[in-house]
Amino acid sequence: MTIFFSQGLLINFIHHNWPELLRLRFMEEFITPIVKATKGSNSHSFFSLPEFYEWKNATDNWHTYKIKYYKGLGTSTSKEAKEYFSDMERHRIKFKYKDAQDDHAINLAFSKKAIDQRKEWLTNWMEEGKRRKELGLPEIYLYEKDTKAVCYADFVNKELVLFSNLDNERSIPCVVDGFKPGQRKVMFTCLKRNDKREVKVAQLAGSVGEMSAYHHGEASLMGTIIGLAQDFVGSNNINLLQPIGQFGTRLAGGKDHASPRYIFTQMSPLTRLLFNANDDPLLKYLNEDNQRIEPEW
Image (cartoon, rainbow, N blue to C red):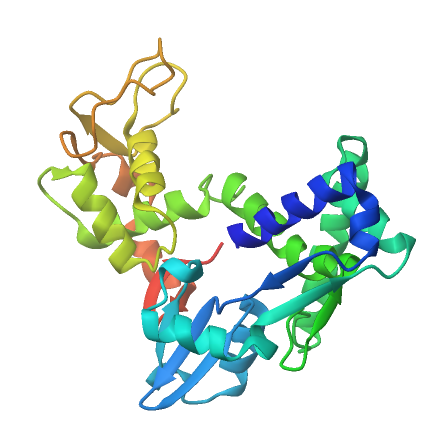
């Protein structure tokens, strides 16, 4: 998803400095799969998450496929890269300027003067997504099988909005349990492991990635674990993990913690009192990559 935000920033940069270039069909992009589903010699590539979810809902035996998430060309093998570049017609997408709606969409997404309109834009998108889900309609996505060109308004309203919404979901704690998605994955893993002894933060991060289908960087995950364990004034009301080692001080806002390779943690005795084990069977657990992961809130 980050790659689409980078594209958005580049579009905004050119639109702000040389808007005439966008009207000349100056920009093109090369898209690569975000998710691949493979079963034997049969392979499906998906260029947006809604497209993948639509296929998943329409395919009864999807769990027999190997699901792999991609983070740009770095995840792809040399063979896959050659496949991408041998099919330029599918992967090369041209941007076309349609009308003033394109200018409005770019300003809506990036202008400092459009903060309130941006909130309304995201709210409307979320409500429309909820309505479509209740009616059993598929989600809207940008890169369909025959897409050769897109206008800037469609890119902002169908693709960039996905990143903006996911960014909010990852950044704003849930009112039910007070967790952000990354924190919930960490606590789910800790409760599942039920360790009775301390574990290195770096090792726990690897375990979280394996047990909860975490698709982002381990450095971010280790920062999340450290944040959950910090107990200085101003960090947590209750630290759900114990800080065993130097987890940072109030003076530096916790940023002066030692390397995750050298500090340890384990669940606080209070954690299981707050998250009662008898409630576990009542929760609705998510399923990803054919494994049960953290509960849905």
